[in-house]
Image 1 (cartoon, one colour):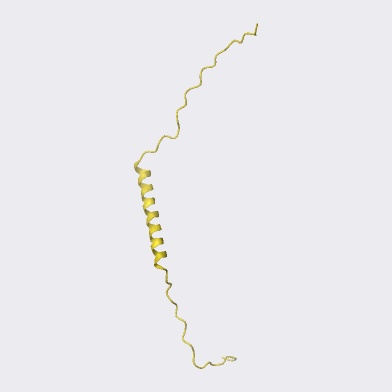
Image 2 (cartoon, rainbow, N blue to C red; image 1 turned 120 degrees about the horizontal axis):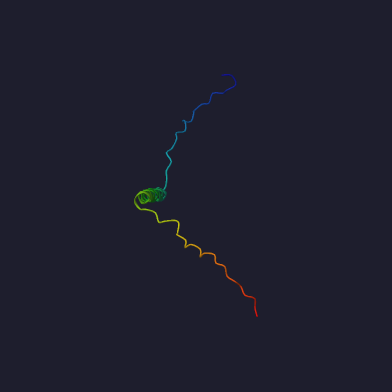
Length: 74
């Protein structure tokens, strides 16, 4: 190739290094993930096994309209 100089003593190609995570971070991620899975399983179990509470409360009927005669003051 034109214009390129040959280098003497080539450095070895850089090799990818595995990413190292701190143990505390791995344990915390595992515990958080475990709690999330358990909570999701509990929510699905609860949704399909426990009947929900009624959302609407019956309202007493309004008293019937009655005509009240208002007498003028004496």
